[in-house]
Length: 242
View 1 (cartoon, one colour):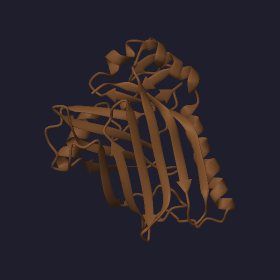
View 2: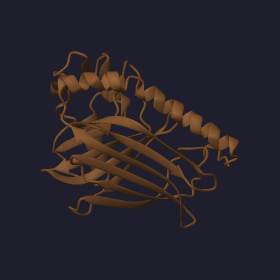
View 3: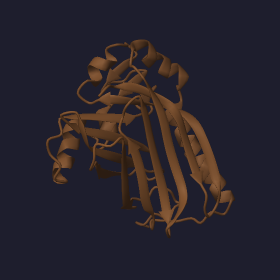
């Protein structure tokens, strides 16, 4: 399994009860959690667990500590999943000190075989996190998971949702498709299609120039499209805790 810079397109398509579709260019890093420091050694503009123009802070993820891999393995062991020896993260790190990911993905391997994928969800504006653990039951190129929604993400989406998510095994192309089904009808899809380039110092630096405001742009798009849904009188759902 190879690390890489993955670039491509994110598409959101809501079909009911209001229609709203948008897409944008995006870039993510696919990093071996055991090799991040040596990977960033290719460029003096990037650092692990310290501030730089580009940086990866382990405390930005999952349980928010400084040993991300250990936290993930501990989480998997509580789920009765053992033997994980290699974990890759697919995420957008900090650009110029700012980090925001609606979701980051962890691909967990045992001796080169993909065992589990973890979807680490971060909601806005509540700043809460929730992890869905997906067990890969075959060695096929695409892994499908159907499960019920457990975590409030958007005020324009009810909790009574069934998810149908599909992941390709990471290779030169990564595709992730997430369907939201309500009353047996698909009402929303988010699809991520990315192509890999090898990580080099030059490409890491170009990433800062090409997507300098990527995390901020993600937040702006979330609120802008929320406003469009509000204008269209899309039903509003309060946080279940309220």
